[in-house]
Length: 314
Length: 314
Image (cartoon, rainbow over all chains, first blue to last red; front, side, top):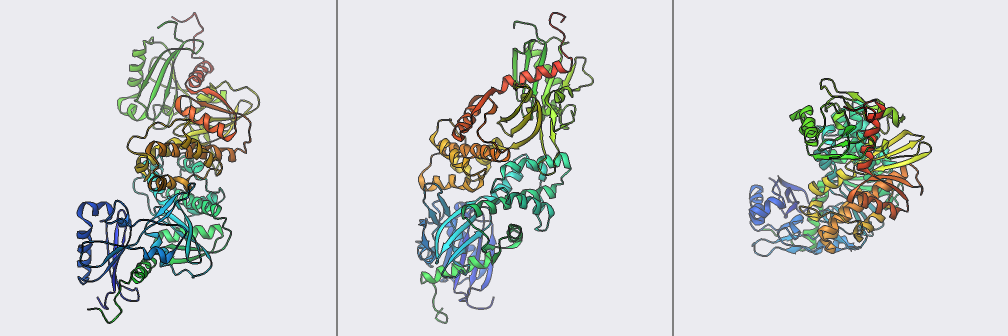
């Protein structure tokens, strides 16, 4: 490992944890990925799980740690109460809550709550990705962060005006594992490729239906029975249907025409969404999700004066 | 048991079986309900399962048996190949396939297939309900048969012009059991009442969204976290959202304005759908689903000359 770490940054979700040592420029000096998310850490103890990862990374015992995600939920380590929308992104970061007890400085970034009666919503973790996405300080931006629970955020002049959740990833896995579509997709659905013609056709079809996906789910099963649709292609149909449906629905809610959307994603999921936005005729500015969360965590550490100026570290 | 049975009628689905002895007017002389549907019967043997129920009903050994449902699928007892749309309803019934082997006359009504490239679909069992719903021989009728896989059928002058499937019941149970909403609804969700204000509010909201339900699923979870939504009310929200979404989607597909819809349903599910149609401003002609399937099975027996004229039975 080269360079001096300025802070340890942790994205601590429900089922997994990612931890990095970051230098003063936010470059990762080391990375750990584990499946000891909230659920596991509640049993093993959050402090023990964290220190084990920090030790593996060779983190000094005085290195501060900044955390985002479900570790700050009521069922987490220390509750970092939601900040309410509308909220300046820097105000969210500044609300990081200190974990009492450990000698090192450990803080957890709060989540965000939208307390409207018609569309209540919450996020934890994505606010930090958003903070690190490098959005221009001024102007309106629509941001899409795909995942188990995809988040769409309206940002105005550096503040979150509102947001919504589409549980696209969860729908995919629940339908693939527990609905009649498990017969269509098979036991271990193959990863879907963004250039699959089935993905593209079903995505285009869904984009034309304004977010209605339930009317076409059973057609995947029927296409297997009547048209001999193969398992891998059925997975592509379901993925295209759900992702196309999400974009159509969000476009409708946010009255979004063809201005660019900021897509914060990575890997194969990012490629699927990029393809779907292309099919929708919506240009995207792509931001790597891993880089964004690291930048957001570094910024949170800075906003909370957790980082010792370079050269002064012991 | 009074009266002479003309036929035994069986609705044999994937997970359950219902059998009746019917007199010449279609009135039930006895009824059996069992959980030995297709899945169980594949293990135990279809003939054995059937004869056990017939014996319990006191059916004569020469009594003919007419069956609809998944027993006629490729994984069933004897495959009764799909009839393709568009199809006169009587032609579907006439296609009943005889089970070879047993001495008594046993026939299975075929299912219906819609082999269009864009919207392939299949049904097995609902075609028989439809045949027994007492639809006028002439005119156009839109029929809704709610359930695990709700079917909507366009009937024109006694023929099925086309149909669609909304897996509303399956979505409800899969989301309630396997998605993050299981935390919102609790272990054993209470039955939803049609006069629940939560059911009604979420149904109205969904009716205004053209079939988009995925954008509001997570709001049920968030309403629990932010607004203290209770488990029973969360179940009502999910039910209202999905049923309202189904009606909105089907109304859009079939360009249906405010003409009456034929609603073939029974029990609490029928009450929820009747309430939802009321909220949509769509009048319904309600037909009891149990009565409809019995009438359809009796008609299938007649169309296939399975019934000995009254008074000639041994």
